Image 1 (cartoon, helix red, strand yellow):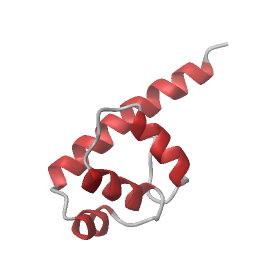
Image 2 (cartoon, one colour):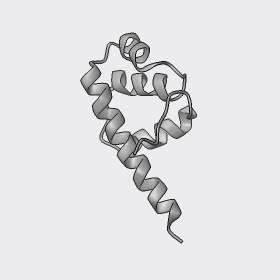
Image 3 (tube, helix red, strand yellow):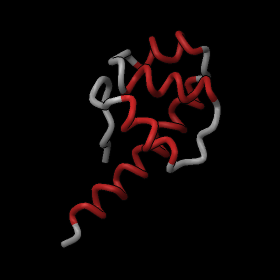
Image 4 (cartoon, helix red, strand yellow):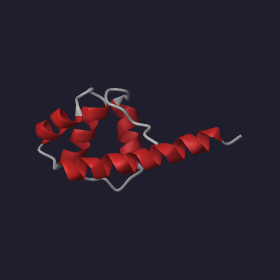
Length: 77
C-alpha cells in the first residue's frame, strides 16, 4: 500500500522517516524531500536533483515500507 504522496509532509517528518532507513545520499534525500515536502512531481524531483529514477523509486519503496510499519504500530491498542 502507498502511504506517501507528493506535497503531504513537513520537512521535519520526512527527515525523521528518512532517519529510520539506510538512505544516506544527500542527492536522494533532497529528491525525496522535494517530492514529499515541496510537492514536486516525481519527474521534477528526479531531474532537479540529478538522481537516477531507479534510486528514487528504491528510496520511496523503503520509505513506504517504514511508513506502513509506523501506521501498523499506531493501530495497535
